[in-house]
Amino acid sequence: MSWQDWLMRVLLVDSWHGVWLALFGLAAQAVFMGRMLVQWIATERARASVVPEAFWWMSLIGAAMLMVYGILRRDIVIIAAQAFGFAVYGRNLWFIRQTRRQP
Image 1 (spheres, one colour):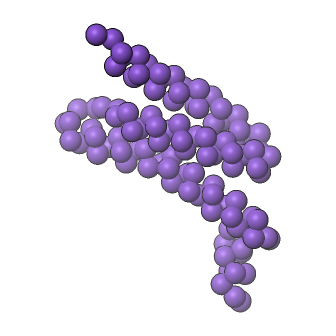
Image 2 (image 1 turned 60 degrees about the vertical axis):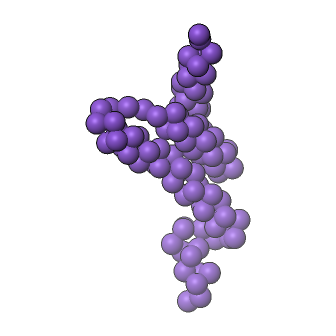
């Protein structure tokens, strides 16, 4: 079995388009999961529960990538799950921006 066949079998796809889509989805999930590592490190450094701005940016970027992945796969479950979160993450970033503008 060639490495290409092995990769397609592991990713449960039957074309190179499927491989690239699966790799994009995995990258999106890595960004989305990475936000928790960022939050954990920030909390450990502060010795208190904190949510850094980077957490919200990674949430927004990860959700956008996962939504694109869901759209390309035509998966309404993924699209619906990310659409709500996308709005929440964007709103939190808007609040952070508004707080910085206040004197």
